[in-house]
Length: 398
Image: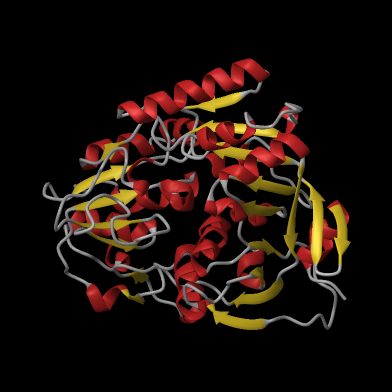
């Protein structure tokens, strides 16, 4: 009997007891992790390279806002030119881009030089986050290896109430599993609630698995035969009744420090950020626009909105969402990218500032000063907060 994760690993490689050596379909890295991978690769005497598997994305600090970032990107372009490798600059965040361009498909194995690579499970693949030296090794061999992880089953049933969304489901299971609950394990998501969601809606749920220290994650998908065998043994099983959830928020400085929004309402906020790989899809922008339409953001609360990719930006422009954001007083970030999420580009927080973000992490210093505070919430909660200038339950605007 096998879990979905075990089935994909066996299909793509060879299993030795509890170890799997698998061929990888794509190898992704970005402008933070690629330079170190290049340095490691250049030490190989044999420069064989699986260039057709390589995807390099400029998304973390684009365009470069400081000299070291500019130098790193120069090195990356020289490397891509030398080996005829296609790269993507200013087209959006690596993870959303990978899915949009069809690089992520059911039953595939993808490695990425980013801890949130495991999000590809929302589209039926195994995503494995690795370090830069591992990226270099994958460029050279086209393979990787890992211990086969045990699997945690997270089942979500019930209809979400008004004002609650997939981000609230994500925060709920992170709270229950805790930051270390998925260590050395995979997470398998299933249930009626999730079956009705598209890939964009699933992204916050898949991405937040990283914050539980999971190795990877995947969603059950009967259509593509991504189901575990009956009576398979899980390491742990968690059930969530979506109908009982209320708007949630992760408080400083940990993603599992989750409370109902109602418990922290009225706290003044200096910045709101709607975007990132977690909540920068067209689904999220439509939700934010629903709250912000014909309303103004608080002038003392800097509001940043960043579509995850260029196609998402163009769709938002066509649908009039960008006009809604601009008329509300929000700042729309271009080009699409990681931006404020990592505290390197746009919206860096100063000492004592408080931000409500739709991203995935609120660790101390994540978005700038270690003396700042970051809260994580859904786009609806973030948009409502932008209007009030204080943490606000989104249901009063829906």
